[in-house]
Amino acid sequence: MSTIEAPRGPTTTTPTGPAPTVPVGRATRSRVARQAVAGAIVAVVALAAVLLLPPLTAGATLLTVALLFLARRLVFSWVGGLAVLVAVIMFVPVRRYALPIPLPFALEPYRVVLLLLLVAVVAALALDRTRTWRPVAFGWPIGIFVATLLLSIIVNGPDLVAAGLASTAAGALVNFLVLLSTFYIARQLLTTERIVLGLITALVWCGTIVALLAIFERITRINLFWRLSTVLPLKLLADDSETFRAGGFRSYGSAQHPIALSVMLAMLIPLAIYLAMYARRPYNDLSRRLLYGGVVAVLLVGVLTAVSRTAVVVLAVMLLLTLLLRPWLGVTLIALSLPALVLGFLLVPKMFDTLFASFLDVDSLIASQQTSAGMTGAGRLADLGPAMQQVAASPFFGTGMGSRIVVGDEANAFILDNQVLGTLMESGAVGVAGLAVFVLTPMIMLLRWAFTAAREEPRYALLAFAVTAAVAGYTAALFFYDAFGFYQTFFVLCLLLAVGAWLLTESPPAAAARAAREARDARTEVAR
Image 1 (cartoon, rainbow, N blue to C red):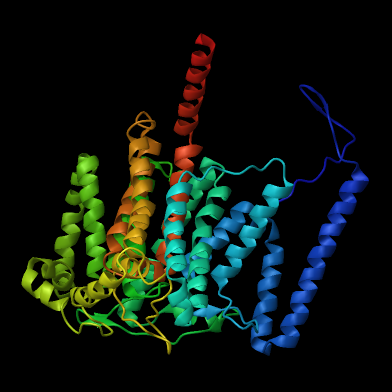
Image 2: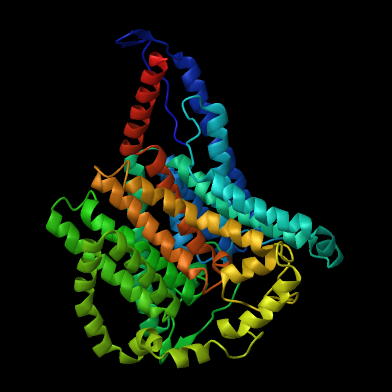
């Protein structure tokens, strides 16, 4: 990552005396060594591209390497690495593309970025004395959830081995840990408030771009994210998909499914509202609120293009939480959204009937969720009965994480569209308890902090509330789709949790509270 070159002069004077310096010759040799290593890497990549890849792919690879070299000071830095991670998460559809490298498995871009950042962070912690481990705040709820997943595999070990699913279960656990590494990596890179605000801004604007292209996709049925392999050196893994509802094409955007797209965009709306109040730019309050008000509108329209009732539930939960804890903000949002709702109803009545009016016809809504039990596309309520019959056989530890395969030639279970029910079947009641700890504890901690330590700092309190609202929306969606199987939304969740961890441990209110606590403990110790 970014380096600091040694001083070129013989000494540097500081208030406490001359500072130790590195000899110029040693600094020069170090710089030459780094350049030699970089040149060797570029040469190896170029040679491998020419020998192993088709001409067009090889040319695209060499162009990418050249651009990376030219932008090396930006890309190969901590902020640059975080930016690359956000860009890959937001713009490269998961399970659709892989790097064109001949390996026994598909090397997807997000895996490469996560691995490189993880290695870089570990190396920095081991070799750089100025970099220390940043507290993660949510380590224990994450640990409890992972422990319940591991316990389900251990308890069901003999059955998994007998069914030939032991490696599948182990792979599922390892894959989940890889996904979770996003939280730990991002937390270690969030070292300043400027970086935190930059991450939030990048997520919101990337989401806005995705929403705009989803609107374009809804109108033209052209998904530009499905054509990345024509401009980037990527290998296509999956064919195009199409889903129709409300008389039109449902947008996929950069997500794996319309539901996942709608949930991801909905989760970014609280952050956009926060930026409308506290973004660094535009400097003018009115301009900033108008700009991000437009961003919120684009995100909402992007949500609508997916035509997903799950997104309506997510938005309703976030709004209800706002009305309960920040009623003035909630009422303001309702007042601002009413004209847009009326306009939308007039322009696209069929879509609004599908998304909103369907909730008013309870009998039809329930009937639609009771069709084709145990089959692909079955209603969620239809799957509930057969699923609970299987749960009754292993109520506490389930059948083991990774035991249910719902796609491919080895499929042995039906799709549930319910992450909580899926966790109950695989990991039992213990796993569901761990899931509850994982998603509910951060919200409780952030809300408590927002109304105590940060109550005098509205900027940080509102950010904590925005993160809480987004996590609450994701939690509500767990009951309506297989959330952990759709990686983009899970990555966004991890990034938001990293922001929450920074708030609880290193933000100015957290630092002030820690200093006050240490002073109080010192006075108590002296009194003794």
